Length: 232
Ligand SMILES: *Cc1c(COP(=O)(O)O)cnc(C)c1O
Image 1 (tube, rainbow, N blue to C red):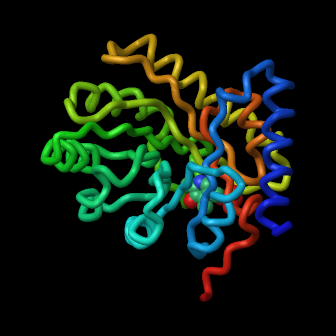
Image 2 (tube, rainbow, N blue to C red; image 1 turned 180 degrees about the horizontal axis):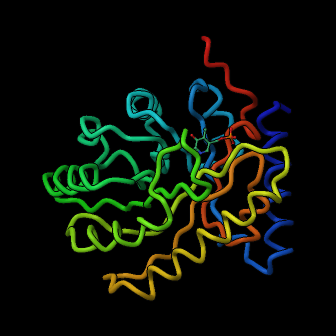
Image 3 (cartoon, rainbow, N blue to C red; image 1 turned 90 degrees about the vertical axis):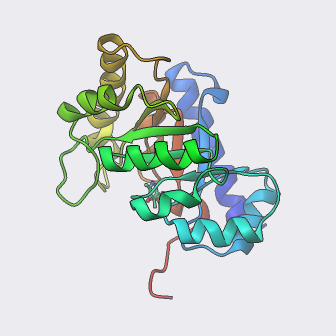
């Protein structure tokens, strides 16, 4: 068996156990295999194990990979997004996880309107206030959602966060819980066309804790494909 298939068996087992601990159904959690920097051959190995949902953080890499892999898969844009790249996304990705400013939201509205499509988006929130990270502060997130909620070609499905890198996943529990509470608060205080129901949180180091705190999407890269090598 390849490393990828062995890793996937382990990740699946951990997801299942976390769901059991939290009294959640396995179907409530979707595993996004984060394939950034990894070759198409690795993606194909994961596909052979039944994986259909993949995450990438660069538009150019998404374009190359989706051109090469023509099977029907669900691609998610999880990385920081520049306005001039938005035009490539309609029809290519099922969800944009990283919306954190008005200009970007307006560009998404414009590009999806031009294609007669609606974008499913998540607002990225920087729960720990890390300087190095993108995302809105929890304080600004509700006002931001309020300001984009009437855009016709955008569906605000929920919130996304990237928690701090840590050896102690328990230390991120407060951020995952905070994201869930923030979504509930926004649903209560804003008159959204549809209530938000999606939380994208948890990566290789902390996805089990994120599932316990209500994650709908976990984004796992290293835990499936191994360490990334940015030098090549
Ligand atoms: C790279 C990346 C991941 C996956 O990180 P791992 O620690 O390798 O699981 C998840 N989310 C985002 C936004 C990423 O850029």
